[in-house]
Amino acid sequence: MRGIKTALGFAVIALMLGGSAIAQGNYPSRPIHIIVPYPAGGIVDIVARIVTEQVGRDLKQAIVVEAKPGANGNIGTAAAARSEGDGYTWLVTGPAALVNPTLYKDAGWDAMKDLKCVGLAVWNQSVALVHPSMPARTIGEFVELAKSKPGVFNFGNPGTGSSIDLSAQKLFQAANIKLTNVGYKGQPPALIDLITNLMHFEIVSLELALPHIKAGSVKPLAVFTDKRVADLPDVPTIAEAGFPEAAYVPWYGIYVPSTTPNAIVEKINEAINKALQNPDVQRQLSVANIPGKPMSLAALAALMKADYEKLTLVVKTSGMALQ
Image (cartoon, rainbow, N blue to C red; front, side, top):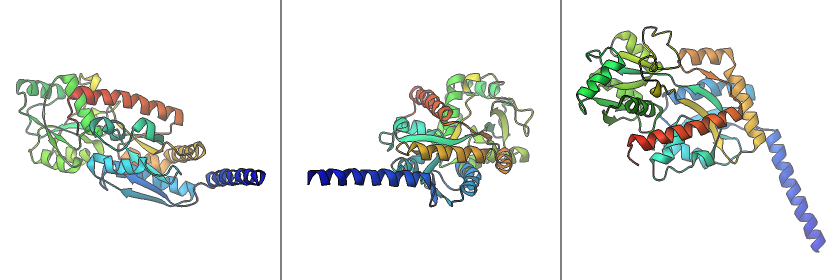
């Protein structure tokens, strides 16, 4: 009997392992669910749809993008981190996935333990804006104004720990200024209040800001990019403007639970990299001012680790209150 039970046990294990291998070999065999932890129509949602629609076509499988906003991205991110590691639940998000566990008492995940970045290195270029009535013409002049009137000027913050917030905090630290933080649920409502002169200073994604810059309803001071933007040739980068320490360009990644098998992770990475090389995808990303490039899993892991260490330090030294 013992021999029979042992043989049966090995048979069951073999079947389980064999089934797992078959499942990985056939991946994906059903629709892939992508969680965006922010409202539909925002910059993260735009990024997710541009790239993953092409991924779906290449994999010949349906891609379902679901906006799951709430708690500054925590609800959707936690749901993805806790999902089954079978390759059928992806997360598209920015720096908040790395820093929120430092900002919140119980965010619901540990970025370096629970998530694995599998692709989509897309950079969110942004621009520092003020209302046209603001006397400052450059970021340097605004800094001097802010220093001469401490606490008078306010900053429209689209979300604590968001990519925009982190860019602003790095600038405030580098410039040694303090602005009154006014929280918003996303960039669009904050931008509306800047246009109507209720806010003094904001950093806004280029995709959202350019139409209003061209209309003259907001004034650009500097761009958070590696080089000058073709649509704003006279606007310096933040480094050119004298604040190289603040030259942070946040990126978005696609993540899966860390328990996802390596074979599936590699297949996802290959599919995303292929999509990023598609001419139509490149054109759409360029138009949206969110350039991206294919990256290996090793390069993504290194980028994730470097930003985790850098950004958690920004949070700890910025005085951001634990939520």
